[in-house]
Length: 289
Image (tube, rainbow, N blue to C red; front, side):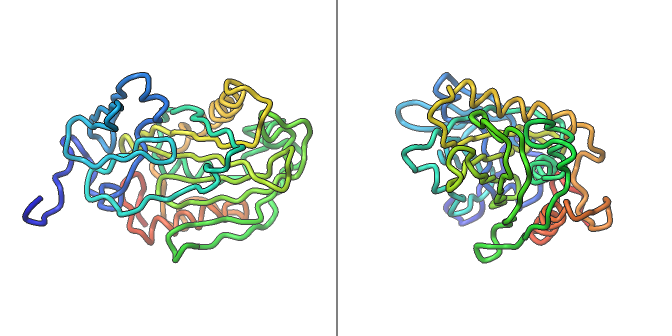
């Protein structure tokens, strides 16, 4: 705008939190848009995204839109100059696939917190990502990186009977978790057939409302044998096991006060994530301290 004032907030937006209004959010996979327009909701605002030979288009107009990491991203306010990247996606032998978009009755921060949780593997993803009696979460390290802009958990290890669609045996899988965005997380885990390299799984959450989210899942795998349907089916099976757990959590908004919920060693990432959100001043989808 010529007077230098910020762009108007999209009609219907119910969010007055600048942390999220002035942020890029995933709203649709580019592969999904190739089949036609996507009608959805972002922060309470109804929007429609289309893709044609001239690029991405948003209805109603007035908000910023960009293509990145296989998704269309929208900002309803003043967009940041940059959006986090995943350099591994450029490696030529990777299979990068949109594994699905899932509507969940929970907040975006609750969905990200669950994604970071190692402790639920044996109980929720039994005989896949975990199994009794291997339930212990070994100590790992969580710290802010990239000048304090990203939360990263390293040296996470857990025994997994079947860590991916192409796994043929159980082994101790090493994880790195990365949170470069208040509503997005990226997981790097050892590939079962080439343990010198890591598969990548991204969970990109689109806040529909305070306690409703559309979770977009991207997988970038070192797998030359599984079909796309098998890759997608495995990830959708895992998410289907998580969804009832997510929707049963009360309150749906994530409490940020350190004493709000019981903390154990397995919750080191959860506690660090809550501090990360508190430091940035997030109010939407959370219960502030």
